[in-house]
Image (cartoon, rainbow, N blue to C red; front, side, top):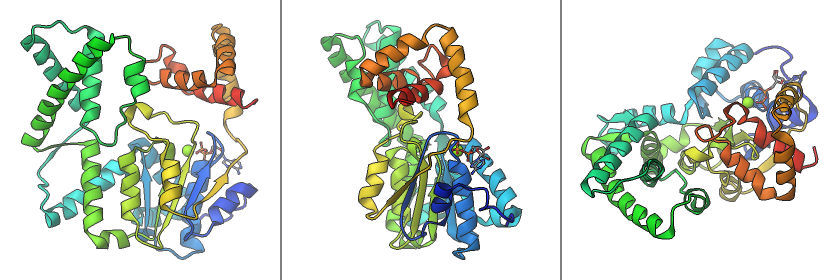
Length: 358
Ligand SMILES: Nc1ncnc2c1ncn2[C@@H]1O[C@H](COP(=O)(O)OP(=O)(O)O)[C@@H](O)[C@H]1O
Ligand SMILES: [Mg+2]
């Protein structure tokens, strides 16, 4: 254990780190407030003071990059030996491991291929193209894109089909939208058939299998004494179910996240998971980290760059008049759609700060 790892923490951080492991905890704050620092210190504290064995602790991240960063930071803090004993990985990696190990116990075929989003999109595109030829109907590019999105999302329980974003904001006529929805239903069926005929699992499907296993094999719910997850705002409903169904009574859950900074909404991230947790885990405490250690300088630098593009003042004027615009801008700032790609982190953050009078 790195000596003095608690001494650099501020009061709120220390409170979160020392918080009783048996009371579910949400640690909330913006970027650069030391959320990951608190999570890694809390892991050290659980081992050091609450005497949890590293192998009884599970640390779940959203991306491989985050898992690598977490591993590196923990190695510094608790050393390589203890770090290697933790169950640390992405939702997908942990689900994969679980399905391979325990799948046969409930008759799951473990000889599946795993498809990522690109593979899925390729199939959806192919099916959409085939349909447009067979019904001799020209699909415009944006209609075909809409259909692909719909086919992929409908097949994925953890994904959100947000009517506001996907239907109300597209500029198809009501009649055309209805036609497209019918075509989408046909293609979705074919899409699902191709996946199941070839024993293909999507990333989301993999987590669903893991959830099914956790629900049916009680030992799995006894394996961990504590689960911790970073960037909780980016978890989908299925990923939340993964956390929930893994925990038996009396086991601990700590999540860290920023409810204002959901960047994976387009991939199914569900901000309602904060409320769900409070409902499903009565007595959940919240600790807010206030002090920002990183972003002031870098955000101000980026903000100046935006201002120099001349877009900033008009964006703020709109946002201040109409709080909903902030959400729209947040949505518009999605990686694939934004025209200001390099500022996609800055817009939601700066606008929400501005709206709060910051
Ligand atoms: N109490 C603290 N005192 C000084 N620096 C801190 C403190 N807490 C966090 N930091 C530093 O702030 C930076 C951001 O921390 P990090 O844990 O990555 O934040 P977040 O996960 O909220 O983005 C890191 O460089 C970290 O070392
Ligand atoms: Mg972090």
